[in-house]
Length: 388
Ligand code: NAI
Ligand code: SOE
Image 1: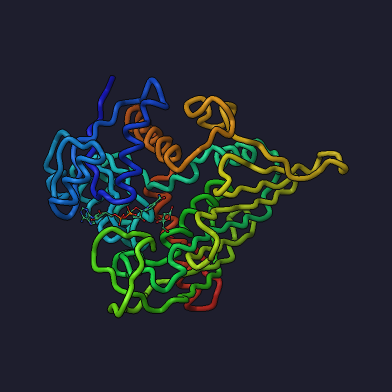
Image 2 (image 1 turned 180 degrees about the horizontal axis):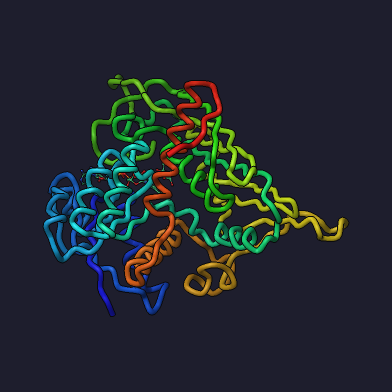
C-alpha cells in the first residue's frame, strides 16, 4: 500500500487532533487510500518539538519549518500553527512541491489567502483548508437532503457559533486576541466555520451587513506558548494589554441564490461551549443542527400530514454519509476526532486519485473575503458586496 510522508508544523491543540487523524484514518477507512507516515514535527523550540514527536508518534522533530521544504521525502505539509505563519509556510511548501493541508482560517486576510491560493495553483499541488465541521455526518446528511430537493428552494440560513471559554476577563490574552497573529477575533476563529457550512449548504454568499464588538477591552498578558483556551486564569496583579480583535460578530447575509440569513459568533456566551447551530428554511421544509448534539439531524417536511407535521430526529449511523467507515450503530457517538479522520481521508484520497478536495484554498480565500467584508461593513455601517 502506498505511503505518504507527513511533516506537521505546530504541536499544540490541532497538532494533537491531526496526529490522531493520521493514526486513526486507516483504522476507519480500509483499504486506506494511502498510509500517512508521521515523519517529522516542527515546533518553536527543542522541548516543544521533542515532546510533540514523542507524544504524537512522529519519527523525528525540528525547530525550523524551513528544514521540511528541503527534505524531498516529505509529501504533505500540515500547517497547524497560529494564523500569522500560515501564508509564509504554505507558500514555501507549494514552491517545494508539497501537498498542503492548512488549519483555518486560511490566513489573517483575504490578501494573504490569495497569495497562498496563487502559490498552490502555480505549483499544481493539492490543497485543503481544515474546516472540519462540514464532515460531521449529520451536516453531510443535511447537504444530501438539500441536493435531493427534500426541503425545496432555500429561503433562509441562520447560523451560530457560541462559546464561553473567554467570557471571563481573567482568561489571558493569548495569540487568539492579537490582531497581528490571529487577524481577527471570534470572526476568523469561529464564525468562519459557520461561513464554511453556510457556503457548503446554501451556496455562495454575495453580500454582508456586519457588526463587530469587543466586550472585554483588555486582558492579562500571556506571552507566547500554547493557547490554553481560558483553562488557566491569570491571578494577582498581572500586566494587562488591550485586545484589538472582536469578541463577537453578527452579520446579515445574502446568498447569490437570493436566499437570506444571518450568522452570529461570540466567545462571550456563558453556558455555550461549542454551540455550532444552523436552521435552514426551504420552500418545502426545514433542517436544524446543533453540534453539541452532533449525532442528530432534525428535519421537517411541509408535505407531512398536518396532524403529524413537525421536526423529527434522525440519528446518523451506517446509512448516512461516511457511515460505512465509521461506527456500525447509529448514535454510538460521533466526535471531533471523527471529523478530523474523515478530513484526513478525503485529503489523502485527493492526492492519490488526483482529484479536487473541498474546502480548499479557494474556499479559504472566499471565506477570507467574506470575513474582510464583515469587518468593512461593520466599520462603514453599510451592506458590503463580496468582490474578488
Ligand atoms: P496552539 O496554541 O494550541 O498551538 C500552536 C502550536 O504551534 C504551538 O505549539 C506553537 O509553539 C506552535 N508554533 C507557533 N509558531 C510556530 C512556528 N513558526 N513553527 C512551528 N511551530 C509553531 O494552537 P491551536 O489551537 O493548535 O491552533 C493552531 C491553528 O489551528 C490555528 O490556525 C487555529 O485557528 C486552528 N484551529 C482549528 C480548529 C478546528 O476546529 N479546525 C480548532 C483549534 C484551532
Ligand atoms: C477556539 O475558539 C477554538 O479552538 C477554535 O479555534 C476552533 O476553530 C474551534 O473549532 C474550537 O474552538
